[in-house]
Image (tube, rainbow, N blue to C red):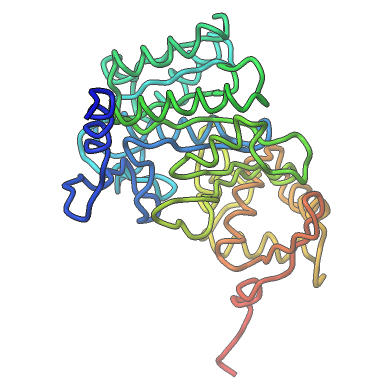
Length: 356
Protein backbone atom coordinates (compact mmCIF):
# COMPACT_ATOMS: atom_id res chain seq x y z
CA UNK A 1 0.00 0.00 0.00
CA UNK A 2 1.38 3.41 -0.95
CA UNK A 3 2.43 5.82 1.81
CA UNK A 4 -0.01 8.50 0.61
CA UNK A 5 -2.92 6.04 0.69
CA UNK A 6 -1.92 4.80 4.17
CA UNK A 7 -1.79 8.37 5.45
CA UNK A 8 -5.31 8.99 4.14
CA UNK A 9 -6.62 5.86 5.87
CA UNK A 10 -5.06 6.98 9.16
CA UNK A 11 -6.60 10.42 8.80
CA UNK A 12 -10.03 8.98 8.08
CA UNK A 13 -9.68 6.68 11.11
CA UNK A 14 -9.14 9.73 13.31
CA UNK A 15 -12.21 11.45 11.87
CA UNK A 16 -14.53 8.45 12.07
CA UNK A 17 -17.48 8.53 14.50
CA UNK A 18 -19.17 5.35 15.75
CA UNK A 19 -21.94 4.69 18.25
CA UNK A 20 -19.22 3.80 20.79
CA UNK A 21 -17.23 7.01 20.34
CA UNK A 22 -16.60 8.74 23.65
CA UNK A 23 -17.53 12.34 22.90
CA UNK A 24 -18.32 14.92 25.57
CA UNK A 25 -21.85 16.38 25.36
CA UNK A 26 -22.40 20.03 24.57
CA UNK A 27 -21.48 22.43 27.36
CA UNK A 28 -23.85 25.39 27.46
CA UNK A 29 -22.90 28.75 28.98
CA UNK A 30 -26.43 29.93 29.83
CA UNK A 31 -30.03 28.99 30.46
CA UNK A 32 -32.65 31.35 29.05
CA UNK A 33 -36.04 30.80 30.61
CA UNK A 34 -34.79 27.34 31.53
CA UNK A 35 -33.57 26.46 28.01
CA UNK A 36 -29.83 25.66 27.60
CA UNK A 37 -28.24 27.98 25.03
CA UNK A 38 -24.93 29.36 23.70
CA UNK A 39 -22.92 26.15 23.49
CA UNK A 40 -19.14 26.11 23.80
CA UNK A 41 -17.28 24.96 20.72
CA UNK A 42 -20.00 26.31 18.41
CA UNK A 43 -20.89 29.39 16.38
CA UNK A 44 -24.01 31.41 17.27
CA UNK A 45 -25.46 34.04 14.92
CA UNK A 46 -27.05 37.28 16.17
CA UNK A 47 -28.87 39.26 13.52
CA UNK A 48 -31.37 42.06 13.00
CA UNK A 49 -31.80 45.40 11.27
CA UNK A 50 -29.59 48.36 12.14
CA UNK A 51 -30.17 49.71 15.69
CA UNK A 52 -32.40 46.75 16.60
CA UNK A 53 -30.78 45.88 19.93
CA UNK A 54 -27.97 43.51 18.91
CA UNK A 55 -25.40 45.31 21.06
CA UNK A 56 -27.83 45.30 24.01
CA UNK A 57 -28.13 41.51 23.65
CA UNK A 58 -24.35 41.17 23.52
CA UNK A 59 -24.04 43.40 26.59
CA UNK A 60 -26.46 41.17 28.48
CA UNK A 61 -24.43 38.09 27.56
CA UNK A 62 -21.16 39.70 28.64
CA UNK A 63 -22.66 40.94 31.89
CA UNK A 64 -24.06 37.46 32.56
CA UNK A 65 -20.66 35.94 31.87
CA UNK A 66 -18.56 38.35 33.88
CA UNK A 67 -20.39 39.07 37.10
CA UNK A 68 -18.83 37.56 40.22
CA UNK A 69 -22.09 35.75 40.97
CA UNK A 70 -25.32 35.85 39.05
CA UNK A 71 -26.09 38.25 36.25
CA UNK A 72 -26.97 41.86 36.90
CA UNK A 73 -27.24 44.28 39.74
CA UNK A 74 -30.52 43.87 41.56
CA UNK A 75 -31.09 40.35 40.19
CA UNK A 76 -31.38 38.51 43.47
CA UNK A 77 -32.14 35.17 41.82
CA UNK A 78 -29.01 35.51 39.68
CA UNK A 79 -30.85 36.00 36.42
CA UNK A 80 -32.19 38.89 34.38
CA UNK A 81 -34.77 38.77 31.61
CA UNK A 82 -34.76 35.00 32.22
CA UNK A 83 -31.05 34.70 31.32
CA UNK A 84 -28.92 32.78 33.83
CA UNK A 85 -25.31 31.66 33.73
CA UNK A 86 -25.07 27.90 34.19
CA UNK A 87 -21.91 27.83 36.29
CA UNK A 88 -21.30 29.86 39.43
CA UNK A 89 -17.76 30.87 38.47
CA UNK A 90 -17.48 33.89 36.19
CA UNK A 91 -16.54 33.33 32.55
CA UNK A 92 -13.83 34.96 30.46
CA UNK A 93 -14.88 37.06 27.46
CA UNK A 94 -13.28 38.34 24.26
CA UNK A 95 -15.21 41.16 22.62
CA UNK A 96 -14.14 42.14 19.11
CA UNK A 97 -15.68 45.46 18.03
CA UNK A 98 -15.11 46.42 14.40
CA UNK A 99 -18.02 48.86 14.02
CA UNK A 100 -18.04 51.44 16.81
CA UNK A 101 -15.57 54.12 17.85
CA UNK A 102 -13.09 53.45 20.64
CA UNK A 103 -15.00 55.92 22.82
CA UNK A 104 -18.30 54.08 22.30
CA UNK A 105 -16.74 50.67 22.98
CA UNK A 106 -15.23 51.97 26.22
CA UNK A 107 -18.48 53.65 27.23
CA UNK A 108 -20.47 50.44 26.75
CA UNK A 109 -17.89 48.42 28.68
CA UNK A 110 -17.67 50.90 31.54
CA UNK A 111 -21.14 52.40 31.82
CA UNK A 112 -23.44 49.67 30.55
CA UNK A 113 -21.76 46.32 31.20
CA UNK A 114 -20.10 47.70 34.32
CA UNK A 115 -23.44 48.95 35.65
CA UNK A 116 -25.07 45.57 35.03
CA UNK A 117 -22.19 43.73 36.65
CA UNK A 118 -22.24 46.08 39.61
CA UNK A 119 -18.70 47.39 39.29
CA UNK A 120 -15.77 47.88 36.96
CA UNK A 121 -15.34 44.88 34.63
CA UNK A 122 -12.47 42.62 35.67
CA UNK A 123 -9.62 43.07 33.19
CA UNK A 124 -8.53 39.45 33.67
CA UNK A 125 -11.95 38.28 32.44
CA UNK A 126 -12.76 40.93 29.83
CA UNK A 127 -10.49 41.21 26.80
CA UNK A 128 -11.95 43.96 24.63
CA UNK A 129 -10.44 44.91 21.28
CA UNK A 130 -11.58 47.76 19.04
CA UNK A 131 -10.45 46.99 15.48
CA UNK A 132 -12.32 49.66 13.53
CA UNK A 133 -9.11 51.46 12.56
CA UNK A 134 -7.25 48.33 11.40
CA UNK A 135 -7.10 47.22 7.75
CA UNK A 136 -9.87 44.72 7.05
CA UNK A 137 -7.30 42.30 5.59
CA UNK A 138 -5.53 42.11 8.97
CA UNK A 139 -8.59 41.75 11.19
CA UNK A 140 -9.21 38.02 10.83
CA UNK A 141 -5.64 37.21 11.87
CA UNK A 142 -6.05 39.49 14.89
CA UNK A 143 -9.41 37.89 15.80
CA UNK A 144 -7.98 34.36 15.67
CA UNK A 145 -4.92 35.46 17.64
CA UNK A 146 -7.12 36.98 20.37
CA UNK A 147 -9.03 33.68 20.69
CA UNK A 148 -5.83 31.61 20.77
CA UNK A 149 -4.04 33.85 23.29
CA UNK A 150 -6.92 34.72 25.64
CA UNK A 151 -8.68 31.31 25.45
CA UNK A 152 -12.08 32.75 26.43
CA UNK A 153 -15.34 30.97 27.22
CA UNK A 154 -17.36 33.49 25.20
CA UNK A 155 -16.42 35.49 22.09
CA UNK A 156 -18.55 38.40 20.91
CA UNK A 157 -17.57 39.12 17.30
CA UNK A 158 -19.27 42.37 16.28
CA UNK A 159 -19.24 42.43 13.33
CA UNK A 160 -18.10 39.60 11.15
CA UNK A 161 -18.88 41.51 7.95
CA UNK A 162 -15.79 43.67 8.52
CA UNK A 163 -13.29 40.86 7.93
CA UNK A 164 -14.29 40.30 4.29
CA UNK A 165 -13.81 42.47 1.24
CA UNK A 166 -16.91 41.24 -0.57
CA UNK A 167 -19.84 40.00 1.51
CA UNK A 168 -21.17 38.15 -1.57
CA UNK A 169 -17.96 36.21 -2.27
CA UNK A 170 -18.82 32.57 -1.47
CA UNK A 171 -15.21 31.39 -1.38
CA UNK A 172 -14.29 34.14 1.06
CA UNK A 173 -17.38 33.41 3.18
CA UNK A 174 -16.54 29.71 3.39
CA UNK A 175 -12.96 30.53 4.36
CA UNK A 176 -13.96 32.91 7.17
CA UNK A 177 -16.64 30.63 8.65
CA UNK A 178 -14.30 27.64 8.32
CA UNK A 179 -11.58 29.44 10.28
CA UNK A 180 -14.03 30.36 13.04
CA UNK A 181 -15.35 26.79 13.25
CA UNK A 182 -11.79 25.51 13.56
CA UNK A 183 -11.04 28.02 16.35
CA UNK A 184 -14.27 27.03 18.13
CA UNK A 185 -13.31 23.35 17.97
CA UNK A 186 -9.69 23.90 18.97
CA UNK A 187 -10.08 26.43 21.80
CA UNK A 188 -13.71 25.60 22.72
CA UNK A 189 -15.33 29.03 23.15
CA UNK A 190 -18.84 29.92 22.11
CA UNK A 191 -18.31 32.39 19.26
CA UNK A 192 -21.23 34.81 18.80
CA UNK A 193 -21.11 36.38 15.33
CA UNK A 194 -23.10 39.56 14.65
CA UNK A 195 -24.32 40.21 11.12
CA UNK A 196 -27.07 42.56 9.89
CA UNK A 197 -30.12 41.43 7.98
CA UNK A 198 -30.75 42.74 4.47
CA UNK A 199 -31.96 46.36 4.42
CA UNK A 200 -35.41 45.77 2.92
CA UNK A 201 -38.03 45.79 5.69
CA UNK A 202 -39.64 42.54 4.58
CA UNK A 203 -36.31 40.72 3.99
CA UNK A 204 -35.02 39.21 7.24
CA UNK A 205 -32.32 36.97 5.77
CA UNK A 206 -28.71 37.49 6.84
CA UNK A 207 -26.72 39.63 4.44
CA UNK A 208 -24.85 38.16 1.49
CA UNK A 209 -23.00 34.91 0.95
CA UNK A 210 -21.41 35.43 4.35
CA UNK A 211 -24.88 35.46 5.94
CA UNK A 212 -25.89 32.29 4.12
CA UNK A 213 -22.76 30.45 5.25
CA UNK A 214 -23.06 31.72 8.82
CA UNK A 215 -26.72 30.69 9.02
CA UNK A 216 -25.91 27.22 7.66
CA UNK A 217 -23.05 26.57 10.08
CA UNK A 218 -24.42 28.23 13.25
CA UNK A 219 -25.63 26.14 16.17
CA UNK A 220 -28.26 28.78 17.01
CA UNK A 221 -29.53 32.02 15.50
CA UNK A 222 -31.08 34.91 17.45
CA UNK A 223 -33.02 37.75 15.84
CA UNK A 224 -33.20 41.21 17.43
CA UNK A 225 -35.88 43.76 16.57
CA UNK A 226 -37.21 47.07 17.86
CA UNK A 227 -40.73 48.49 17.77
CA UNK A 228 -40.29 52.10 16.66
CA UNK A 229 -43.53 53.21 18.35
CA UNK A 230 -43.15 51.57 21.75
CA UNK A 231 -39.32 51.39 21.78
CA UNK A 232 -39.59 47.81 23.02
CA UNK A 233 -36.74 45.52 21.98
CA UNK A 234 -37.39 41.86 21.23
CA UNK A 235 -35.06 38.86 21.03
CA UNK A 236 -36.22 35.61 19.41
CA UNK A 237 -34.42 32.35 18.76
CA UNK A 238 -35.21 31.62 15.10
CA UNK A 239 -33.04 28.53 14.56
CA UNK A 240 -31.33 25.89 16.70
CA UNK A 241 -29.75 22.47 16.36
CA UNK A 242 -30.69 21.38 19.88
CA UNK A 243 -33.10 23.09 22.26
CA UNK A 244 -36.03 25.19 21.04
CA UNK A 245 -36.67 28.38 22.97
CA UNK A 246 -40.37 29.14 22.98
CA UNK A 247 -41.74 32.66 22.80
CA UNK A 248 -39.62 35.78 22.84
CA UNK A 249 -37.83 38.08 25.27
CA UNK A 250 -39.02 41.69 25.40
CA UNK A 251 -37.12 44.44 27.14
CA UNK A 252 -37.12 48.23 27.48
CA UNK A 253 -34.50 50.69 28.65
CA UNK A 254 -34.60 52.31 32.06
CA UNK A 255 -33.74 55.96 32.70
CA UNK A 256 -30.03 55.04 32.72
CA UNK A 257 -30.25 53.34 29.34
CA UNK A 258 -29.96 49.83 30.79
CA UNK A 259 -32.14 46.89 29.68
CA UNK A 260 -35.06 46.07 31.96
CA UNK A 261 -38.03 43.75 31.77
CA UNK A 262 -41.04 45.54 30.32
CA UNK A 263 -43.13 44.42 33.29
CA UNK A 264 -40.79 46.30 35.62
CA UNK A 265 -42.67 49.56 35.24
CA UNK A 266 -40.79 52.54 36.60
CA UNK A 267 -42.15 54.21 39.71
CA UNK A 268 -42.25 57.68 38.17
CA UNK A 269 -45.42 57.63 36.08
CA UNK A 270 -45.68 61.36 35.59
CA UNK A 271 -47.33 62.08 38.92
CA UNK A 272 -49.52 58.97 39.17
CA UNK A 273 -49.18 57.49 42.64
CA UNK A 274 -49.20 53.71 42.12
CA UNK A 275 -51.22 51.45 44.42
CA UNK A 276 -50.19 48.25 42.68
CA UNK A 277 -48.52 47.65 39.31
CA UNK A 278 -51.35 45.62 37.80
CA UNK A 279 -54.09 47.96 39.02
CA UNK A 280 -52.32 51.10 37.78
CA UNK A 281 -51.51 49.67 34.38
CA UNK A 282 -55.08 48.50 33.93
CA UNK A 283 -56.49 51.89 34.92
CA UNK A 284 -54.06 53.75 32.66
CA UNK A 285 -54.92 51.80 29.52
CA UNK A 286 -58.61 51.49 30.35
CA UNK A 287 -58.84 55.29 30.49
CA UNK A 288 -56.77 55.72 27.34
CA UNK A 289 -58.88 53.25 25.33
CA UNK A 290 -62.01 55.25 26.24
CA UNK A 291 -64.28 52.27 25.60
CA UNK A 292 -62.94 51.63 22.09
CA UNK A 293 -62.79 48.02 20.96
CA UNK A 294 -59.50 48.67 19.16
CA UNK A 295 -56.97 51.50 18.91
CA UNK A 296 -54.02 52.10 16.63
CA UNK A 297 -50.64 51.89 18.39
CA UNK A 298 -49.66 55.51 17.78
CA UNK A 299 -53.04 56.85 18.94
CA UNK A 300 -52.95 54.73 22.10
CA UNK A 301 -49.44 55.91 22.90
CA UNK A 302 -50.44 59.55 22.42
CA UNK A 303 -53.44 59.10 24.73
CA UNK A 304 -51.38 57.50 27.50
CA UNK A 305 -48.53 60.00 27.21
CA UNK A 306 -50.95 62.94 27.31
CA UNK A 307 -53.13 61.64 30.16
CA UNK A 308 -50.21 60.61 32.35
CA UNK A 309 -47.97 63.56 31.49
CA UNK A 310 -45.18 61.24 30.35
CA UNK A 311 -42.15 62.52 28.50
CA UNK A 312 -40.10 59.30 28.39
CA UNK A 313 -40.66 56.74 25.63
CA UNK A 314 -38.93 54.10 27.76
CA UNK A 315 -41.49 54.58 30.57
CA UNK A 316 -44.34 54.17 28.09
CA UNK A 317 -42.62 51.09 26.70
CA UNK A 318 -42.49 49.62 30.20
CA UNK A 319 -46.18 50.31 30.75
CA UNK A 320 -47.14 48.79 27.41
CA UNK A 321 -44.99 45.72 28.02
CA UNK A 322 -46.58 45.21 31.43
CA UNK A 323 -50.08 45.55 29.95
CA UNK A 324 -49.32 42.92 27.34
CA UNK A 325 -47.75 40.50 29.81
CA UNK A 326 -50.63 40.87 32.26
CA UNK A 327 -53.30 40.32 29.61
CA UNK A 328 -54.64 43.87 29.88
CA UNK A 329 -53.98 44.46 26.18
CA UNK A 330 -53.85 42.24 23.10
CA UNK A 331 -51.55 43.17 20.20
CA UNK A 332 -52.81 42.80 16.61
CA UNK A 333 -50.10 43.25 13.98
CA UNK A 334 -51.50 44.18 10.58
CA UNK A 335 -48.04 44.67 9.02
CA UNK A 336 -44.50 45.56 10.08
CA UNK A 337 -45.59 49.21 10.28
CA UNK A 338 -49.20 48.96 11.40
CA UNK A 339 -50.15 47.66 14.85
CA UNK A 340 -53.43 47.82 16.78
CA UNK A 341 -54.24 47.08 20.43
CA UNK A 342 -57.45 45.59 21.81
CA UNK A 343 -58.66 45.24 25.42
CA UNK A 344 -57.54 41.95 26.94
CA UNK A 345 -59.46 39.79 29.39
CA UNK A 346 -57.73 41.47 32.35
CA UNK A 347 -58.55 45.07 31.38
CA UNK A 348 -61.99 45.16 32.99
CA UNK A 349 -61.51 42.34 35.47
CA UNK A 350 -61.02 44.66 38.43
CA UNK A 351 -64.32 46.48 37.73
CA UNK A 352 -66.36 43.30 38.11
CA UNK A 353 -68.46 43.08 41.27
CA UNK A 354 -69.45 39.57 42.33
CA UNK A 355 -71.28 40.62 45.55
CA UNK A 356 -74.62 41.31 43.87
